[in-house]
Amino acid sequence: MSGAGKVVLAQPRGFCAGVRRAIGIVERALDLHGAPVYVRKEIVHNHYIVSELEKRGAVFVDSEEDVPHGAVCVFSAHGVAPAVRAGADRRRLEVIDATCPLVAKVHQEALRFARDGRTILLVGHAGHEEVDGVLGEAPERTVVVETVDDVARLDLPDDTPVAFLTQTTLSFDETAKVVEALRARFRDVVAPGGDDICYASQNRQNAVKDLAHRHDLVLVVGSGNSSNSLRMVEVAREHGCRAHLVPDRDHFKEAWLDGVASIGVSAGASAPEVLVRGLLALLAELGYGDVELQQAMPEDVVFALPARLADPVTGRIPRTPLADEAQVR
Image (tube, rainbow, N blue to C red):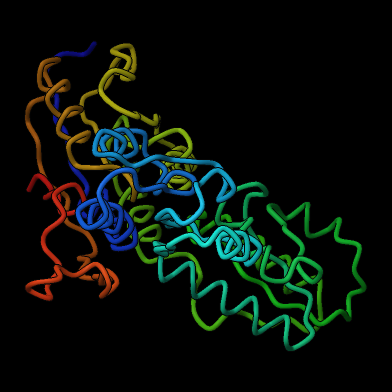
């Protein structure tokens, strides 16, 4: 370890509007219906959030088929395929949909492109829950591509009418390369109406780029299955900085501090501030207690919870403590 040093904390970081909404939906469902409330898949990809909600009575399941007939079931922020909704209907589940509105937009675009008779090229990671959900809207017309090499291997004539969509949590720079390859390969390419990569992913990646250029080490708080957190680590490394994912302070390795005078810290869009505070406290113990704030793009996006989750007496939606957690400033 190099001794005393500085920490620069990125802002914005941590929860995005879609994550706050999804967590708040589970909290309100528990308030109104009591335990258990079933959640299909992890509501967001963060181990701490899942554990805290389990303590309150949320039960996380892999499939709607695992939910008892007639029970309350929350669909995760990552969205679901139509077949999942049909399965929930068959089991007469009381469904509360926590799909991020930005993911829902991609679903609607898939339906529109399919109606137009286009082949949909879905840029994303095969097997990710968000990709599975969008793919399910028009599986016979959709092909998942991840890399420029995947584009070259597509078994489609160059004059095929295609449209592309992207997973919302990808690296903006890497996705741009794939889209460029698609435009070079096909003559008739239609883009979505606006970027599919969400504002929060872009903002956090841009902040990490700045950290990478200014500091010896970048630490990103987030779980190992969080796509947007992993992309942030990749972005920092691509810009020449040592970078590591830190699910929580227990996963931090003191050896990472060798030769480090300044550290940039950020957090993925599904990582709660309590985990950031834990990491900052550990760094302070190790001699990195001088913390500065790096203010980048301000965020004021809010996604309202469904009206059905309002208090039946006041008609208002109360605060949801886990979702409304404040950041260190």
